[in-house]
Length: 123
Image 1 (cartoon, rainbow, N blue to C red):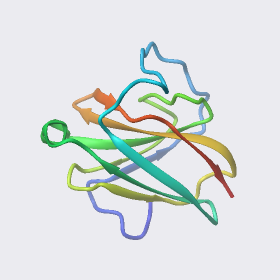
Image 2: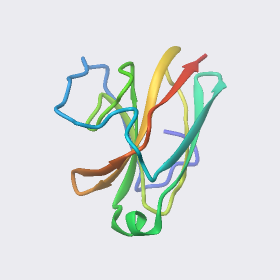
Image 3: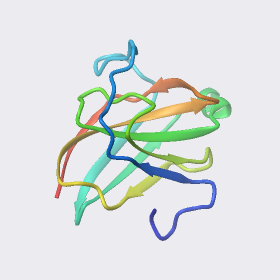
């Protein structure tokens, strides 16, 4: 967890095999979410997102998902959630190499919408 993490945040880093889920989302679907990120070196990446007001009003939390699969889905082996008041994340201690990241707007255990995935090379 980053040193400026809030109490309602939760990070899970389990190195378990990732399972495919029956999700119809695609890297090429239209999304209202603006999700961006960049690798910062030292095993760190920074992410920001913008959510339409109507979707933000329903959001209970935002989940940033990491995977080696080009279209990560929730639940995933690596993820970090933020409360609905947050629209950014600095994720530290990431493993080196190419990875895909995606934002999920979560209400209960349902992902209301996914962002398009981002491909980053973590160093």
